[in-house]
Length: 259
Image (cartoon, rainbow, N blue to C red; front, top):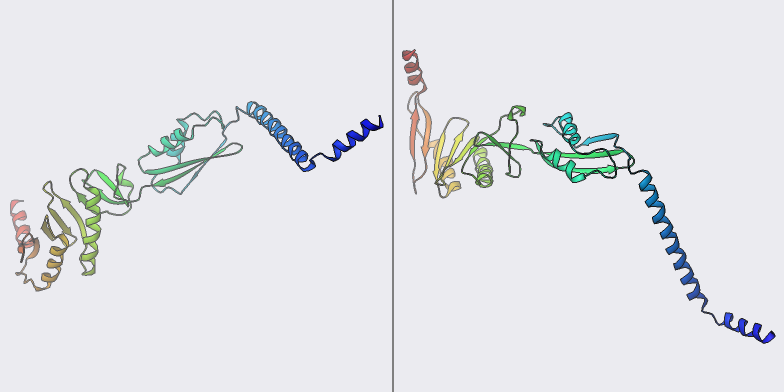
């Protein structure tokens, strides 16, 4: 018997204790994870019907009423916090006219947060649409706008180019105290500008900036006939320009005579 005890002692003494402790620790962690999974599963089953009680709208939307956002979200299934379809909520809010992007976040235990980013309108496009700061078209109620916006016109798909051109030429003209209010690109890709003073500039299809600079250089040298205002300046020439004048007083007399 002493011999057997001695052999057992020798076996224990020769055991790789670090390895044995490592294996034991690993098995303990696995057991805890299994128990945690079962606990979480039971907890989820118990709380599967947790309801959404609070809706928070973030982002300070300017043109979109909070009640419109809430009504849009109510069209989705809000019966369960865990089963809430976040993508459906995003799509419902994004369908609102002024909304550019939406992010939705669930906050335990009963709250969803909706962050709304609106379009920032910078111009009208073909009278019936709006352009945002990225040159992207959207449809919305322009009656909500507090300030007048420039008017841009052009063929379908040219809105990005038109907006970039407007910004470029607007800056050129503003340096010389001219205010650009409208721009049009024809089907044949010829450019026209309208200034706040009522002057119309025909630029043609090529060298837009160069022709605008020609107008700026020549404008101080133009001799205005008595009672006349600049109407149209045609810059579609390699050199030079053509000028048309309008006579408000003469037109006013004609209108009165017709009345």
